[in-house]
Image (cartoon, rainbow, N blue to C red; front, side, top):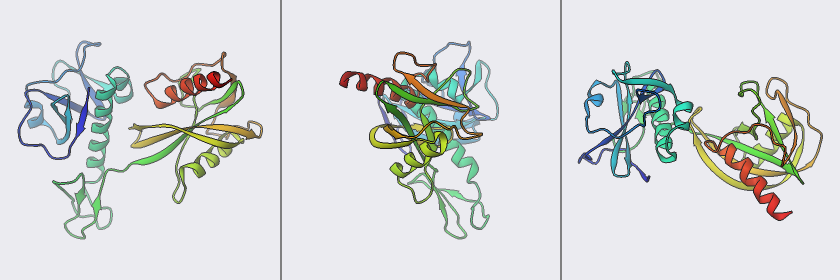
Length: 269
């Protein structure tokens, strides 16, 4: 599936449309459970929506982000994370984009400088204040992810909100004035008390929980003993490549990072 993003509807409707519709932050999926989300020919939802945003085209079909007051008959509300895990990768990405655009629109109805009601702009994804001219764009928060490794082992940790038994790579938001590299070294030291040297860029992933861009690296351990950060890290330890705990699925970049880094390190040993 190929997605071509856009801000303005081109004016000629596709025969069918993807409706990424939300009620109270949850994505609408068809009943019964297990039914696949499909593009629809009916555009009636857009007339009933509280907010409508054009996103682009997925395999030639128009994609719309919709905020609805309630779920129509035959549809159910599903938490976004759970819904995305069951969607094809490209469609899951559009759903995440839709959620972020709707959340930005909802939280920027009024100017953060003078309080005046803002107006949506046509040529760009922005809301502009007619009184003071301040423009608000969708906020993207860069965050680092680092898989710390040493020969034969990776350092994995779990936060208190993780699913039971789940461990993952370390992660944290970039602070003002920081580079990604500085953020990695600071967050690793803060969260588990170790130092890292050589960094290797792995990849990135848009992550709407909330409005993040995850930028993933592997990081070579250079020293220090594990000391978990109170209230942030419930437990952390070194795991042998062949004795990993439960780790995230490949739905998230952390699942890719852990598996692919271990495969790469094994091939070099």
